Amino acid sequence: MEDININKYLVQEGMRLKDRTTHENFGQESKALKKSLRQVSKELAQFQDSLYAHNKYGVLVCLQGMDTSGKDSLVREVFKELNARGVEVHSFKVPTELELGHDYLWRHYLALPERGKFSVFNRTHYENVLVTKVHPHYILNENIPGVDTVEDINDAFWEKRYRQINDFERHLSENGTLIFKFFLHLSKEEQRQRLLRRLRLRRKNWKFSPDDLKERKLWDAYQTYYQEALLKTSKPHAPWFVVPADDKKAARLIVATILLESLKKYKDVQPPELDEEIKANLESFIQELENEAP
Image 1 (cartoon, helix red, strand yellow):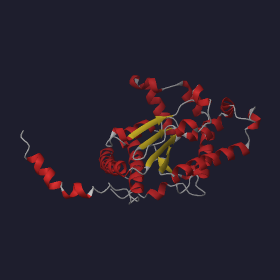
Image 2 (spheres, rainbow, N blue to C red):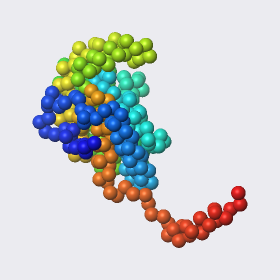
Image 3 (cartoon, rainbow, N blue to C red):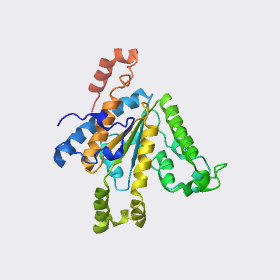
Image 4 (cartoon, helix red, strand yellow):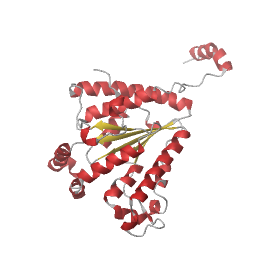
C-alpha cells in the first residue's frame, strides 16, 4: 500500500471542513487495511516500551466526532497491541455535580497521562466549545462569575475559552505531554446508515438514544463550530487532524499512522543505558541462570 501522507490530514489556516473528504480507503479491501493496521499497531507497541523506559513524555490522544463516527472501535483496534497498563481511556460525558463544582478543565487535568504512558480522551475538553456552543444554556450550570444568563455568553466569552484551551495545551506540551487531536469526519448520510443499523440490529439497540436524532437535526451548527474550534486551536505543539471516517478501517489506519510517524521523530525516546557494572557482568548473569539446576 502507498505511504500515507499525514500532512494531508493536518488542519492548516483556511481549512474548510466541507472541502475535506469523509471517505478514504486507499483503494484497499477491508482485509488489507486490517493487516496494515496490525503492523502499525505493533510498531506503536514497540515505541510504547521505549516511551515507558525513557519516562520523560506522556502521550495525549484526543478523539472528537459526531455520534457514530467510530471513536470507541478506533480506540479498541488502534491500541490493541499496546500494553494495557500503559494506555488509559477516558470518556467525558455530562459533567457530574462534583465536576461542576470545579472549573471545566479540572476533570481533564485529572485524566492526563503519566510520563511513559498514553491517555486517550474519547470526547474531550473540546466538548466545552462544541456541545455548549450548540446548547449555550449548559454553560449556566458552571456557575461562572458574571455569566448569569445566556445573553452573557457572547463572542468574547468563546474567544476567552479558546484562549484558555490553547494555554492549557501549551502548558502540557512544555511539560512533556505530546498532544495529538483527531476529528473523525463523518458524512451525514453515513451517520444515517449507522443509526439505522443500531435500530435494526437488536444487539446494537442499546447504543441508540432518541437524543441522537435531536442532535442530528443540529448537524450544520455542529459542523460550523467544529470548523471554528479546529482552526482556532490547531497549533504545532497540539495539532488537529481531520480523518475521513466513513470507512472505519481506513480511519483507524490513518490515526495509527499519524501517531507512529509523529512519535518516531522524537529520537531521544530510547531505553536507558544499563549500569556499567551490570553491563560488565551480563555474561556471568547468563551463566548463573544457565547453570541453575532445574
